[in-house]
Length: 335
Image 1 (spheres, rainbow, N blue to C red):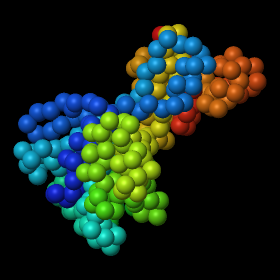
Image 2: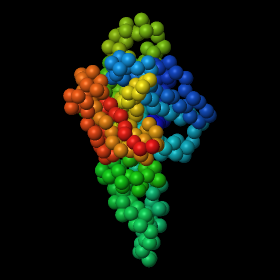
Image 3: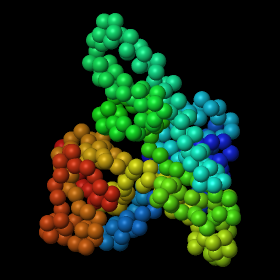
Image 4: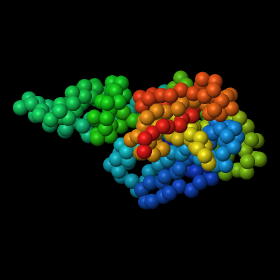
């Protein structure tokens, strides 16, 4: 999973990025135009699997978060947004109405960018369809899906409102439509509003005082609690934000138990078992036969794979099975 910070200028994106770097104690890869931080999802369920199975090694899933530097041009920023799996959009808080206005304005900008990248292609296909017809099936398929997409954008609406199927999204994937991305909304609070930090379901947004959290992360752990309470915080929320970006960004975790390790794998929500197999190795995807599926709680409560199988908690699923968060999977495949 590749997440990229986006949003209006001076909203605190770089401060948020620095906060997360300090929270996890990691230095990002950096070049002139971007900084890339690898974030680890230290999921407690994986620790429980390791304790149960006594495997010597544990491997957590990771994802990357990218922050653009001031050297990146507007065009370069947009190009990187189009390559992202998840856009983490950061807004500077002044009031709730102000945040909503900023968000609406930014979405309008994304809609316009999507229209600019797709309108020339649409007009070319439309002209060809009127003149002599579209002879290639791929062109006909694209035009059929692109026409309502263009109408949606011209109305000033984001493409996510069309609820396009995965097949339709695949046909349009070469455009890199921004309003078809997965979004995470983050509101950067001033220090005096730090007590409001956390996820607000009514606004579908994560609130964080990034500057204050950065100071907290720089303190010795024994001093953080008292400092946090002085600002109305129970504890720092930086680590919660790392998980929030992953899961709210449309991803889940599935687990595998090998001979030497237990491992977590990142997978886009709604993905099939055969796609999950491909995350491990392309040979598994090509030769997929069945997936052994055990829910995490069943795996733990039954004492492992054998106990789950004996108790009837292990299922054999085909390629189209939609993987759920926490599934413990083992794949059968032909070599």
